[in-house]
Picture 1: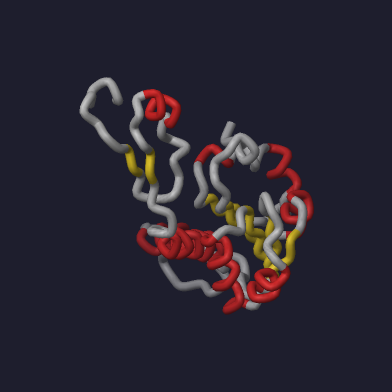
Picture 2: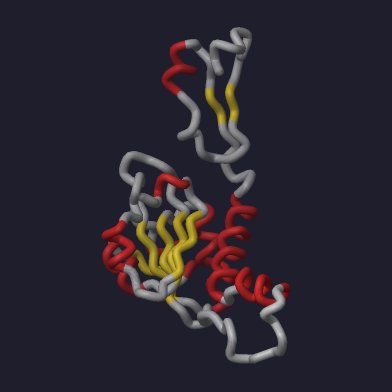
Amino acid sequence: LLERFPKLRVVSNYGVGVDHIDRAACRARGIPVGNTPNVLSDATCDMAWTLLMACARRVVEGDALARSPAWTSYENMVLLGKDVTGATLGIVGMGRIGAEVANRAKGFRMQVLYCNRTRRPAEDEAALDARYVDKATLLAQSDFIVLLCPMTPETKHFIDAAALAAMKRDAVLVNVARGGVVDTD
């Protein structure tokens, strides 16, 4: 693409991630690469909660059933899903968005666990009512896991077959990070 636009002067991404941009090729051509941190933080947090709630309460399945010919009568025990209130939320990546996800979890009286490259200061943990744990603890104890980490060599395939096996059988995994954080093979 860079060859097709020889007059290109800057590459910028609407969002924080630049892992999909060939920064070395840009650097070799003297083209700066920019991003827009924080512009989508609230929207990403909203989407994380939208996906978590939709999975927990089986919204997509319920909508499909209600629209199908199979729906003949209301049954209150069908597609109840999983309680969010009082559940344990695991957050992988406690940056701006992770902190906002944790903050919103207070409304559901959730226990919040997190793992991150670096531990947040004690005052942040207290304000967010979040506890720093290792990956194994987060996977084993969380009812819901939200991935919010950047795509780096350390986070590529952070969730693999072994990680899935270490999770609770009925845990819900929400990935609002980069696709490569989950090994889908």
